[in-house]
Image 1 (cartoon, protein in one colour):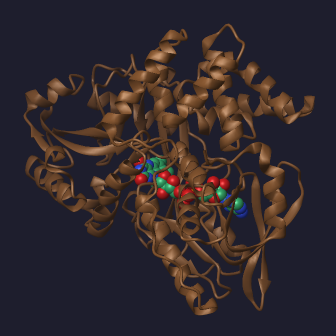
Image 2 (cartoon, helix red, strand yellow):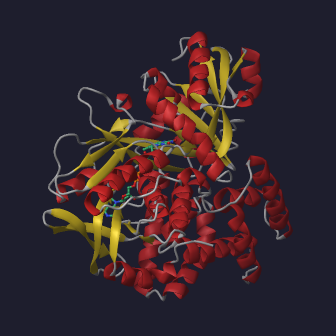
Image 3 (cartoon, protein in one colour):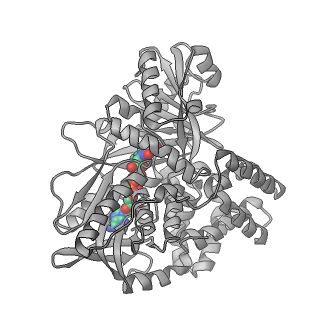
Length: 548
Ligand code: FAD
């Protein structure tokens, strides 16, 4: 099984500091993950450095949809809708346990964003552009049909609906699994490794200097080429390279809030109108429903993006109007997340109007930077930038690099034939967790998070001695994620590998001590480090669930 072990970190550091690489990538979000897999699978010798944890930037803060971006049709971004629309089916094929098909309901309301004819036409174009299979193509619904699907909708303004195909995922898990897949192609991947400067040879970048945030030590990686996939931090890196000119980023903030399913019991995912002309998603996920997103200009600290009360009020007001019986209040919000879209500045355009297209910047010193885009389009973004790099390698080294093959590389966690195969496996896992004294919900949870790697976690589960099955399961996941997914801090575990901070925040109190004890034993943490980690957890819970 390919993976990135926290316990092999010393070995990887020894290697990256002593060998010469073809390419070093800065940033371990979905963009960097896509690039490292693309480049390594084409035979390049690649290293990747992430300054914090994998997916700790925007790639754990999205709406978690692998979608074509219906709203971009309205902005006539046909090429973008077509590309990401087509990508959905490919990414689903590569990881059907992690990218699941999901029908989206778009209610048609009196004076809403889209009328009946425009919706019908728009969804048809959307299906054609994305090459959606006939049986999955959009279906227009009468008012009664829409209400049957979603009885919580406001009957007094409802005129009908459109039902269309989308996919949902977990962004942080997808990023991690792609990185693990790249490690299977011999890529050397490190978290908590911040690129702090560049190395130059004959005025061309020839590697990076990086700081190990776990030890405080500074090291170098020598590489013929450097790509920055630093998301919202791309301009900071361009400044370090003295190449910050021309186009720049315009980060916009997006917030999601999480509500208990019983308080907001939507039957299915809904994409609905709010009074300011925008639209929000309500997405049921296991025991909760999450709601988002906002889209506002952001000028604050890139490393400390928070959900403000005004964001929560906006989202709850939108939901309360569209679903008049739910009566959501701020006290109902269990958790939340806030992230930044690394969009490219366009003069005179507001946050919502900015294009979601990706863009590559090339500096005189050879640094390639990529920003913008969508989670959904990560594979094509990677293909484009590695194609560009392949041309340079051909020019500089007279070496031919093969074409992109990532549309055929199954992402870690499989293989599964299709969604049906996932469901069958889910039933097997659900039976096992039930007989171990756990709610069958954990079957869906395990397979959705880890796919067939659930077998390994259940094996660890058998070996752990604890009376409480929920603690046993968490410790089994911890064992797996330290060994295979480079968990280095409690937050890596609670926030990005397992999603508990967002989707089961109440479980943290029970799991905190056992998880801390186990990590302290594995990593020989000092008392001071244990206190520090405890503090990180307190702060994260506070930020996710309290709003100013
Ligand atoms: P990031 O995920 O931010 O990754 C960049 C990484 O670089 C970070 O981890 C950072 O720590 C690291 N880094 C920075 N500086 C350094 C350094 N000096 N050294 C080493 N590492 C460094 N897209 C979709 O397709 N579907 C959606 O449903 C969707 N919803 C969204 C909702 C919101 C609210 C937002 C904000 C975005 C959404 N997107 C969605 C867009 C998508 O999430 C982003 O396009 C994508 O996650 C960006 O990934 P990235 O890797 O470019 O950036």
